[in-house]
Length: 88
Image (cartoon, rainbow, N blue to C red; front, side, top):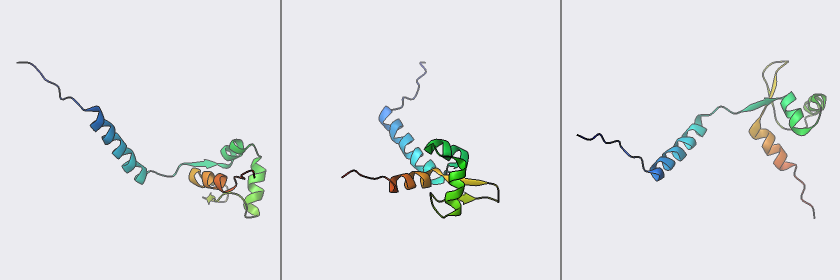
């Protein structure tokens, strides 16, 4: 008797993984960065981000307590997209 292994159709496999990624995205926790990571990303100082928060400028943020501030990556990207200037 010859053992047979179930073959997986690559198309079905790709479709399955695509569907799983979509489902997982619905349940994922937003990825966040701290002010040091954001200051490095934008090449500005942490103090500039602190000043922006005090003056109600910059991207939205989450304040977990008096010392912990986080920025959702999606909010950072949205802010970057809103501040793009198209040359005329």
